[in-house]
Image (cartoon, rainbow, N blue to C red):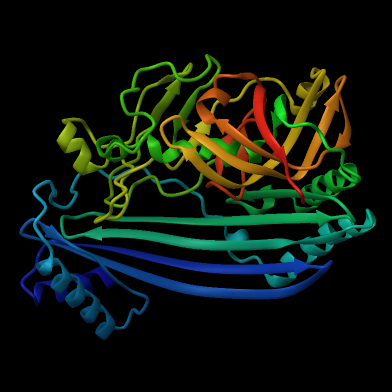
Length: 439
């Protein structure tokens, strides 16, 4: 067994406290552009990360080799680095508590998906876009991963998972449309539906109008909600609050958002992915981050929990690190208003497919700037009447989540600016667009 080799190598240096993370990934990717597949690659990797604890000191060393010599070398390197570091008076012994119940997120058909199977799905998606007189580009990937965690205090955990991702951009003469999806089970992913959505957006946003910047009612599709709301995940962290870099400093227990905003973190949610334990082996607890607009729970790694005198929540990152912890399985509770009904009940507004190039302007007020992309539309009298030139926005996330008028049912969403989350579409009043972009 690999960990036995690691433990034996550590004992040869007089070290008995050691932790190891072993991660393997089989990744396959089909890439297409200009309506043809132009790349098909596959990669198999193994990553070993070793962390000893010696007299209040710790450090980490890694390797992508698994032969006995490489194991001995990486252990020796980790021990040498650890002995050169300064002691950390807050460092805890290795974890030895209860194990998390497993989650089955491994689908053999996804792990065994062939290049031919991906190519057939891509070909169907391209044909949809081509039939609209457009050009398609994107990716279809299937991954199978195993994350294992061991330590010398008896922790022995493993999580296997598959994930499929499909992203497509449909490009017309003066417009574009985009769609993306992901699922642990490739059978739950529909490249054909995603291609249809992207092609329809590109077709409907041709010859875009230019609208005067200002404050508008907006309908944000789930990817747009994810891109913005996902920016606050790292703030629900005891370490971030202790360091004074969270917008939640002096705001825990305060009502920051609207009554209809409820957010939690739940590794066991069916729309989520990832292991049910953190990087030290602590089971992930369900956290109520926001309850009816009020900030409630935050994540605690073991070290911050010990300092605060509370139980760890199972959200710690591999030690040593400067981040500490963060919720990684965020779920926004949705509502009962379908996206189509949001549009139908809007007298005048803007529909946004997604955002990109998002940058933080004010960390404490959580103000962001960025641009719309790949499908921005004018709504008048309950109907989409035209595509719009893209906007730059300057918007407080706190204000945005205080101005939500309607929520759709929540589902797993994928974007480009934040990790996948379970989110609804949102109808938001007074969203601030500052200028029209030139592309």
